[in-house]
Length: 362
Image (cartoon, one colour):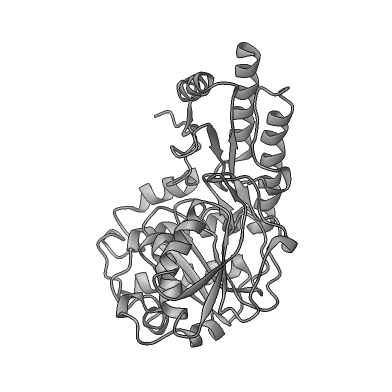
């Protein structure tokens, strides 16, 4: 079977090594005689895997003992509701910074549960081309938390430096760039991420919540959407997504074997330099609409001179073995999503295709 270059934005590429190990071990899990899909989540084998997964995530993220790591379901989209449901209430307010489609959805959900403020936005005519600068933010020092989306898959923007909130806990949706670069966890009260980009397959959501923020969470919310429920039971209150956690464990191990986040960050920097260099050096054939200091290192978006050429680019790219090059349906254009599992050689190959296409169609 010939595998292609997978540039889908999510579910996204998984390390080949992880896929091969999963295939080889699918019928028997840790000597139990059954598949991980068949074993009890109360078994000693799964319990060990579960705790190892949490430990690996904390190690790779540099999280201290003051963080609880939860392995939940519902995707990052459910966290849009869980965060305000647990933390907002009468007399409380939260700040939301708007930088793309997902942060707008998070704001919409939060409004259902309490008072929220837009502390900053870079939206112009329905489009986001940059990340707000510190001086452009209107932050409330009394906010319970300040929510942001660290990387924006649709518009191709990314926080290169997180804002100073003056001690107000940051709550971040890091679904699309988690473990791609080193992050100081100290300013964050909650970090959450759907797994299907840098962590594993869809089906599991990792939530890291700081103890002091957990203590502020309401205990009167519905049982399954209460952080206390899952923190108290080590995310085993109900049957977890066992297979997704199993693969998450493998991806975290793979990440560690690559040299951890510091090593992957260097590779991601090199990938970004390579592809943005090709865009900026194309004499205008390719155009990235994002301001240079806000460009995403995970989701590179660009346009060609015409929509016809964009359609041709995506079609010829697919025929050449490059999957998922079409931009999001809401914005069009081209998008190359290059998460941790997309190696430098894969990006070199797509850049080579870009250069050849430009030469043949300019």
